[in-house]
Length: 171
Image (cartoon, rainbow, N blue to C red):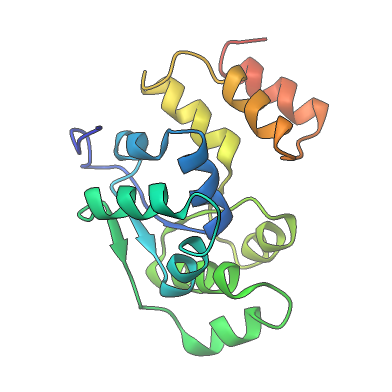
């Protein structure tokens, strides 16, 4: 399991349910301490995640890495409620918490990413995290992970895929 060897200077991030589930499915979530100082988990995200397929693996990971995956209840209630008007509860909570904590946001859903961008939040998507893990030498290649996500219905345009593969030195 990855350790907090380089935590100083790394960003704190707030994670969304789908993002967390994807990283657990890819078996790379335990490597996140190489690219983030802490991952904050809103209670809404944790509730959703613990209902999702693969919940046992996810629950075990969060418990094993409890000093890294941290429950966080701090968010502006008004912002969260406004966001819930057109986003699901987990996305709304993650965005509100990232805004309140001035943290990086780990999110993929298009509508949520657009909303976070309008709020001037820094959003990092799954493929970017995979590229960061390769840069940190935690994984050798990103392409197999990209392919695995795409087989499971993850959508990425060919242009974006090629660009990110090129950034990873794989295209």
